[in-house]
Image (cartoon, rainbow, N blue to C red; front, top):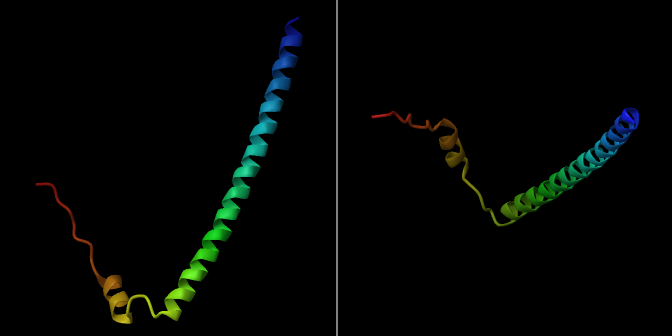
Length: 75
């Protein structure tokens, strides 16, 4: 009787592990799809920015690279 309970629990755990594995695969698929869509959107934004000359000037980009963030101090 005790052995049957253990076998049943093992089977239940195996089923749960299979479901978990399938869900992990689904999550990876969704992450890949999101990444592809993000890459596509980035390409579209770059193309539009180039077409309409939208964006920061070279001087603005250099300024932001050298700009320091102020240090917040407790009073």
